[in-house]
Length: 464
Image (cartoon, rainbow, N blue to C red; front, side, top):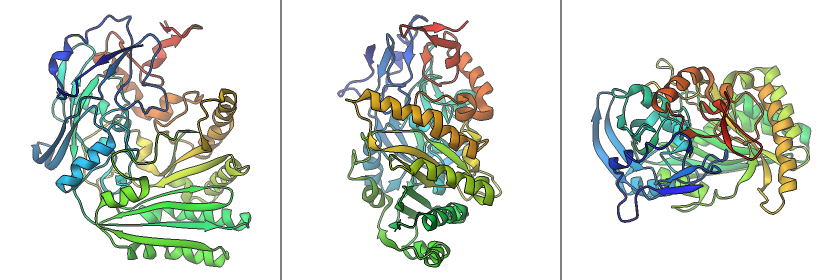
């Protein structure tokens, strides 16, 4: 794979002149991205392909008085090489908070935001894709474009949720910023050897989940094992710790009823960044990654947990997954409903975020306790086969009509078009063909990728 450097440490501003050499022969394929190389799907690499290394595009600009027809207020502009930790450091100094990745090494303008973009702040403000005000893009045809809700609107729509590395090379993105302020945080551990009582409590926890985030800005990240329910972080922007006590009153009563002990601690943080680093470690890199387990991610519909029968079915699936101690399930309770009559989040322009996000109450990741073992491929393959053949199909059956995140094992065997793009796929494919008519950009499970196939030697060939 050839690597083409875009920008240097000495010249980190995007240069529109790079649009000329991007008109490359159609037989040369370009992998989807090369900003932070944090792609579970392996989109950052491609045998015999041309990679665009954007890591040195380090634009970091605070726009305190950004103004456009669709938004007026504070914004931030980040180049394609800016990682989350650098972005957080920039906005902290300026007194803002942003919707950005939890892994400090993940790029803020690549597949993360172009795939939707989860965060501890999504219930407060919406997904990362909902925040984007403009994209600075070079298309595969060599056009240098600024895509906004008012100009090049089809491209803007596709980039905001339709998957990374598909429609053009994003040089920078400008997104909304929000005033920094206090955050209530905390952790909780629920543990018992009485597994019957534990799983009843976990079922109650999921059933009550919508009440935790309805008409609120709160986020709860937790995981379940065969012995515990552990809340890693309560994140409640612009509240104090008493709000956590109030929120949990019904659930703690159920724990008392089931005679299950718990340990709850709460903290008042002066800023979101203080809360964030308490969960994920110091900036700029944190301690979440690069510890990569074998995993895939599924959106959990609100309707599933509210129905007694389907909620129990989901709990049975999770119990089976975690039973032998090899796997655990990590989840984030959230609400990104954007119905103008019911949502408390700021309005956003139309985008291509999978509709299942708007109906989700959580996303959940079945994952191995141990990180990927680079020295034992046989064990890795066995675990991945277990994931794609047994675990993930069972979760999909328990959450019919939902979708997946772009944190997906590359051996996934389901209907990837429906799971990743839903009803938006056909329109996304039309936009893909419009801006990449020579089919230069390719990525596994990217829009239009089924128009190619890999032969026995790993070469990419037209499927027709």
